[in-house]
Length: 77
Image 1 (cartoon, rainbow, N blue to C red):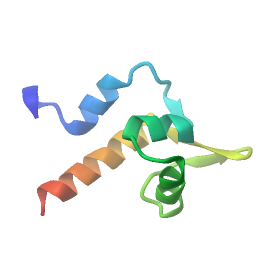
Image 2 (cartoon, helix red, strand yellow):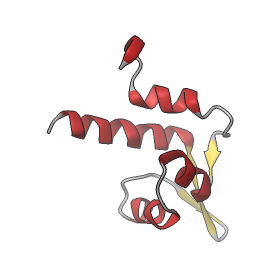
Image 3 (cartoon, rainbow, N blue to C red):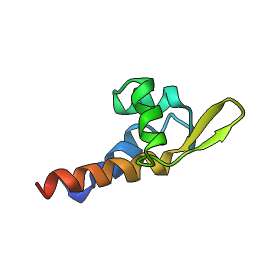
């Protein structure tokens, strides 16, 4: 990537307007996927999050780690 930044660093820098803890809707917008896909990733353990009341919360760092893992998998194919 340009300037030595990883994809995860780029994602983190691009979405500084978001807080450190994200909702399913936030993650859906950040990754450009459906809410159901976010729930699937959570259920499969591919994205780390926790339940809070009736919803989930996901640390922004977990999203960055997920994107970096996906990027590395693509690089290895």
